Image 1 (cartoon, one colour):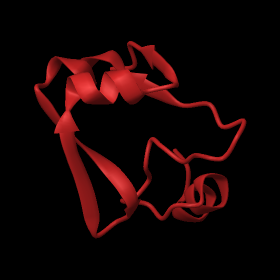
Image 2 (cartoon, one colour):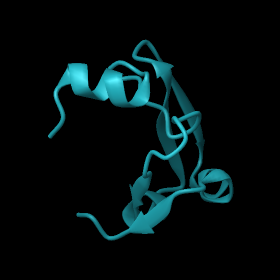
Image 3 (cartoon, one colour):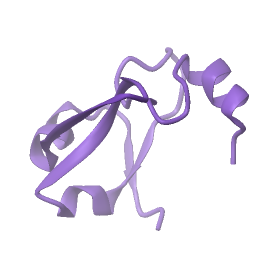
Image 4 (cartoon, helix red, strand yellow):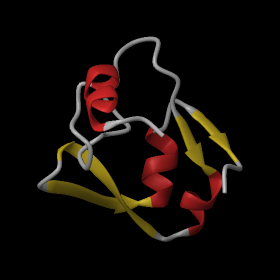
Amino acid sequence: MATPNEVQATTGYRVGGVSPFGAPDGLTKVIDESVFSEPRVNIGSGTPEIGIELSSSDLRRAWSGTVAKIT
């Protein structure tokens, strides 16, 4: 598990606000396949104080990383 300092240094975001979009080039992005079984999901916006709610189907269409069974 990354420390808060490692998270910010790697992603540019603080813990609690990491967004799946706008990640630095070359960063491997992986999302658990179970996320897409929910009708609506909340994702990080780049700041811990604000989240973004969207349909999981919209997230799937916008996702450019790997989908894997993690859990």
